[in-house]
Image 1 (cartoon, rainbow, N blue to C red):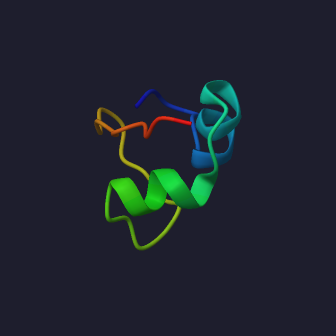
Image 2 (image 1 turned 30 degrees about the horizontal axis):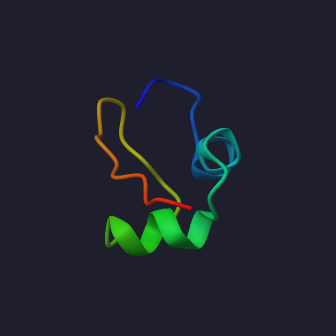
Image 3 (image 1 turned 90 degrees about the vertical axis):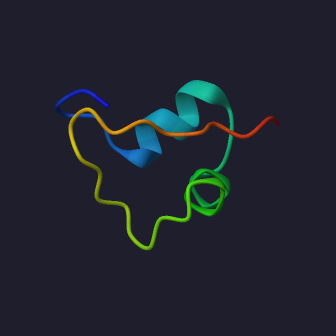
Length: 43
């Protein structure tokens, strides 16, 4: 994760839903940490 990135932006960049990213990474909220690594699910 880089500063200024958020789940909605990442989801649209990869063509997946915010919910699918949140579920794949077991996130409870949309808040992210700089340097955090996310799994991006396939379409």
